[in-house]
Amino acid sequence: MNLPKTNRTTRTAWHWLSRPREGAADKRGEVFLHRRQVFILPTKAGLGFAVLLLVLLVGATNYNLALGFALTFLLTSCALVDMVLTYRNLGQLHLRPGRVASVFAGEAARFELHLNNRTRLDRYAIGVDFADANWPHYVVDAPAGGSAALVLSCATEQRGYLPAPRVRLVTRFPLGLFRAWSYWRPDLRVLVYPFPEPEPEAPPLPMAGSARLDGRGVAGSDDFAGIRSYQAGDSMRSLAWRQIARLDLAYGGQLVTKHFEGGGGDQLVLDFNAMPLMMNLELRLSRMTRWVLDAEQRGLPYAFRIGAHELAPAVGAAHQAACLRALALHGFAPEAR
Image (cartoon, rainbow, N blue to C red; front, side, top):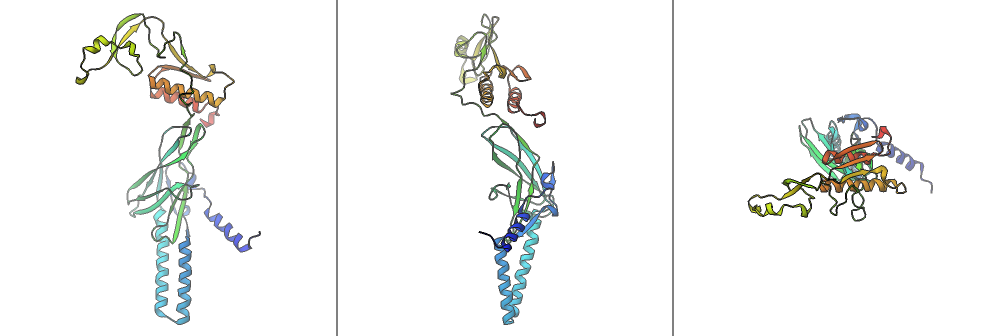
């Protein structure tokens, strides 16, 4: 069915006005919304109000009603004032990206955004969301000389860096007769780690050297060297029960563990290159991710190898972040890192 030429022209004009614009939307760092980056059009309520004004004007003209003309011009003035206020409610805002935290594939990526209002005008009911959303999920106010912070979330599916989607800011304050909007692409990206293999399906940690049932590596087990404070993951068999019996846990006593030196100890090495080649690449990365999390949870120092990356045995948040980053960016071009 062919649409009338007038309808096609109207839809084309509306699409051109509503499409995302370049400019401040793609600048890095803090962005200032000046008048060329804020767009405004009447809403459906505004179009209905315009029809009402036209009817009042025709009626006042036909019956020569002075009060009719006064009412029509008064309402028209209110609409014009509303248009100016709606535009000023969004213009001259400073937009600044905030912090992001790395997530695992399948989790929601969270982007922190800041709206700074450095003018003397309070800003009300500013809707903020990603451009592909049907309607803003967040409506914030920015007081004069103040700021507003919010966090937008989006789903993640693949590992690697995920740039922040285009953000849309929209307002209909105060009367809802006009809709002003602008677009902004924050200079943010979140690092998405591989999805860790489910714990029941993942094999145990690949310990090298003498095997132990509890899977924990120690310095040795030949010569007794004393006792030390209990650490998460220590075997129950290594607890110094005689010393523990002398402590009163109700008064701050601590568990202690026997410490041995000498002998051959276990070594935990997470080597991506040693995994079977017939396994799917993403499955291997998922299994390595699970092993890294398990080793950190149990407090086991572990060496890490993947491609040209080789990290010495260590444990801690920095070591874990370095390993997960190498897994997330494995196989990507250097410019994508």
